[in-house]
Length: 91
Image (cartoon, rainbow, N blue to C red; front, side):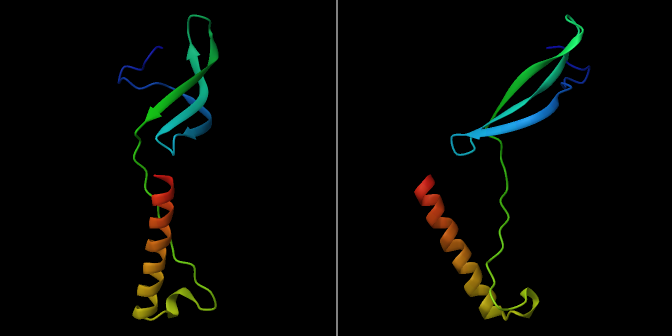
């Protein structure tokens, strides 16, 4: 594949798919091929990409800004427990 002078690749992203619990991500798209003077299909495999997960606790019957510190602590403990159970099942 012809790379840009800075080592990057012009890749037009169309779709993505993840496998093995998100450890491998396949990105589908198109790249310019000067040999055939056209865009051709291409798949990139990205392994070990670090991602962040941001979560908020479930709040029922109360506005988020009106919680006491004790209520927030209980909700955060519930979030941690729920995520830990999911992590143990999947990983």
